[in-house]
Image 1 (tube, one colour):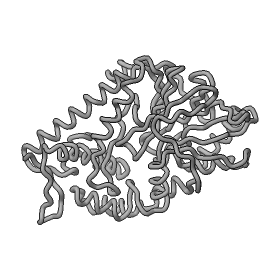
Image 2: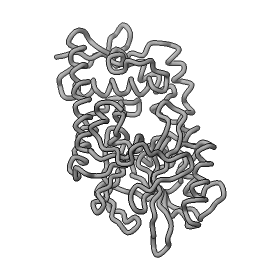
Image 3: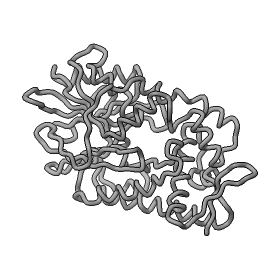
Image 4: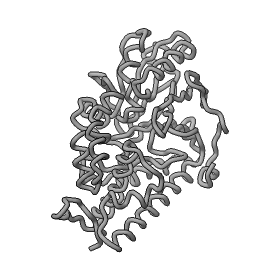
Length: 359
């Protein structure tokens, strides 16, 4: 455990659910961990006792990617945890594959069609972005437009660019289908789940319209990817919104969580449940302030592209999957300073690369 983590209270100590099993973290809310085939090797999903229109059952929050092992884990959960009761709805925090990948499959009852089709609940922004990316017409992970975007921002290695182009099926492979209909949730909506009220708290910068869920009665926050205990949330500028100011949006969004009680139990999408949210948000703000200062200092020496900034922020060797997020995050820091007026952005006529320098 690093020094920053020691400032947090991991409520369940070293407890981690085994694959296909659940741990009750607060009455009626069960923690399930699904494996991922990435460096970030898991996603937490939440199974909640519920009742809708007099029908007892369950609500599921987030799903994991489309993967036979994860489907098998879900079938074990359906068999052993649900007491023979149906899933009544599926809620998804945001459109990234580890959260929405199996939403359509679960909405339709899993492999054994255990319940009649149920509705996906998700924000409009996340649903529409998921549909766009699942169609293959836009993805932060790869394809020709992604390669062009990162080439303009300094990625010159032809092998890496070729690898990016070949990843055009990355999102559709992990999210093979999206429910054709959805129920919209918006900021400040109140969902009744298991007899308790959960307020929708939208956040921006990590994804288009991320939804977290806060229960004031129990002081529990399902934070999704917006507040994580061990790693910093990826905040990137991708090809779909090439002039985006995602870091400014993310830092502004953190204020919505700072208003919650200090002893709120945070149920994150990655890592372990914890208390100490205000401390963690302070750590995140400090982290980004330090990275922004590094960017200022580098740009003061000579004009910098996003690719020039990556080695300053990420000291380890990166595979192509990690490189896309690293480039996106470097660009997010440059854009905050550019759009705040601290830096100017110019395209070099010789190589077509965008670089940033002070006024």
